[in-house]
Figure 1 (cartoon, one colour):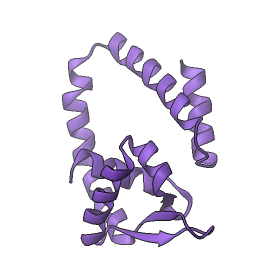
Figure 2 (figure 1 turned 180 degrees about the horizontal axis):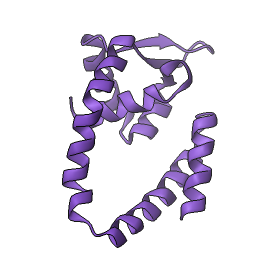
Figure 3 (figure 1 turned 60 degrees about the horizontal axis):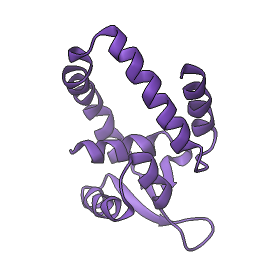
Length: 131
């Protein structure tokens, strides 16, 4: 599973009903709509995600399947170890604090542009407080 695929699955797992409109998912996962569409097709072929029509008709949503959620839960500890090894193990405590502040500000700006519900509001408030 690629890092981007992992991010897509994580983003979906954090949403009510594990579903999100593709245009919003592209923002949250930090990829273009075109790149996301290709990834969603791959994830669909594995049975981890399915596309569905949104409640308002035209918009397409991606929905994390139960199988996709199980795969994400299995991959989580592996991903965490790699992030720790590649990022945090090479930084000082002061650098980690600075990284947290910078990414918090970036996330606050990104999440302020789209409506992702309660989760986004909580993350935005926490990011602004920490920066």
